[in-house]
Image 1 (cartoon, rainbow, N blue to C red):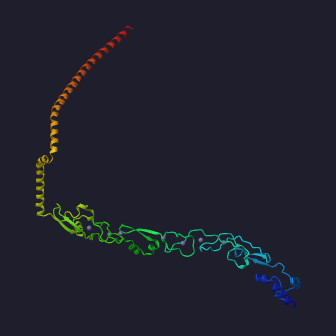
Image 2 (cartoon, rainbow, N blue to C red):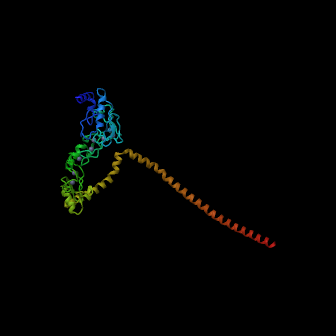
Length: 377
Ligand SMILES: [Zn+2]
Ligand SMILES: [Zn+2]
Ligand SMILES: [Zn+2]
Ligand SMILES: [Zn+2]
Ligand SMILES: [Zn+2]
Ligand SMILES: [Zn+2]
Ligand SMILES: [Zn+2]
Ligand SMILES: [Zn+2]
């Protein structure tokens, strides 16, 4: 009876305490695991303790327990007295997964925000913010980086504009990356066509490709259906052929159609005939006639049609008449000048020669004088 009331009392007093101590009981009667092992003095102690506490507040609990760090790290628990409520942080990094879902907190051990009610007294501290830009690989894969900051889940579809010219080069498309990347290579080629005529120059002739804008080289370069005027060698006979026939004819003649200059394409493919020769002769004779007429007709034509010019010409002729006299005068002047220079030349040589002789004589005299004077000495 006595024990029962004691237990009742204890439980009543320490309800809160017991709730937080499921691992052990701070005091009160404990069912002995082994009657023989429980020694008498211990029993006494227990009874003494319980007796002293009966009806009064509980003393601080002396039991030891393993207590986790504020960051709840495994293996970082410390043995602490139950009544000591102090908290501690270990030396580990927090390591809590961040809201971005890709990284872990690198702060040193700190109380977490969402801890159990036992640690409510501790101020929770938020984990660090992930400030990195998204480093995920896009799906479908592309070379553009995700514009968002580090985030959980899949990246948004890539809306970067990708520029691609059409096959014929007439225009440049701007596709959204997600759309263009999602297409198969065949569909990409279809999407790149501008839908207009190809209009690239055919490799064998001067004509433009009639196909709609297409990838790769223009098909059937030797099947060009454009009309070409074919001429004989003297270029008098004309005929209309299909370009493909012209190409074939040039091939048969031994020259590749792409090597033929533009103005020679289709020339000489039809033979000259008698018509052609007589025409040529007519043409030649006509040309000669024209030439002769032109020379005959020119002067009277000019006089009639351009009287002003004639007047000018006459003036020029008038002004030319005194110039003949002037010419005669200038010629005579030239002749006189020539004679004058000739006389000077002759005089100069004559006197120069004389001077040289005199100089020679004088030098001889001086020499003789020297010789005499040396003999006297
Ligand atoms: Zn810790
Ligand atoms: Zn992150
Ligand atoms: Zn943290
Ligand atoms: Zn992209
Ligand atoms: Zn992303
Ligand atoms: Zn095109
Ligand atoms: Zn083409
Ligand atoms: Zn052609």
